[in-house]
Length: 237
Image (cartoon, rainbow, N blue to C red):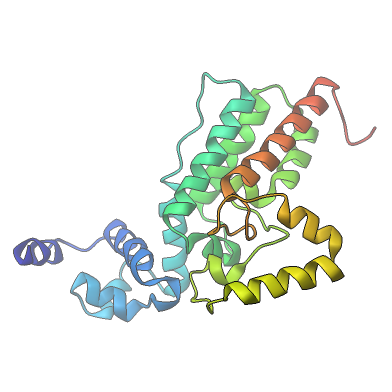
C-alpha cells in the first residue's frame, strides 16, 4: 500500500491531477480545511509546484467546480424535454450529494468558467430542443435558479447541519418542551411540522425527506413550464 502511494506521488503533476486531489481532500476534511499547503502535502510536492497549474486558491475552487460539473450526466438526447431536464437536475443533485461542500463553493463563485457555461448552454438547449421559445426559456431558467445545480435554498434550511458542523445534543424532555412552545405560539408552523415524519438527517427541515421535497418542487415547476409551453405563453401577454 505504501509503495502504491509513493508511486502515485511520483506521477507527473498536471492540472487534472491537482483538481481531482483537491476534490478528494475536500471530501475528506471539508472545504474549510482545504489549503494550497495541505493539498501540496497530499500530493507530495512543495506548494509552489501547484501554482504552475492553478494561479491561486480561487482558481483552484473554480476548477473543483468544473470537476463536479464533469460528473453530471449529459442530456439524454432521445428523451422528451421534461424527462431530459428532470434526469439532468437529479444527476446534478447526486453529484452535490457526493461532495457536500460543493454547494457552498458554487454559491460563492464570481467567475463563470467554460465548463460551467457549457453546462448552462446544454441545459438551455434541452428546452429549446423541446420547442420552447427563447422568451419562455429565459423565464424558465430564472424560475429554476440554483435547482439547475441540484440544490435550492429551503425555507427550513439548517445550514449548520448541512455543512456537517457538530450540533448540541437535545434531550427528549427539551424536544417536548420545544414542541409545546411551538404549538402554543406558532400553531400553523406546528401543524405542517408534524405533518411529515421522514428523514431525521434532512437538510430541508427536521422531519422532512430532502429528496422527496426536492423532486416535489421540481415536478411542480416542470408541470408549470409544460402548461405555459402548450399555451404558447409569452412575457408580453
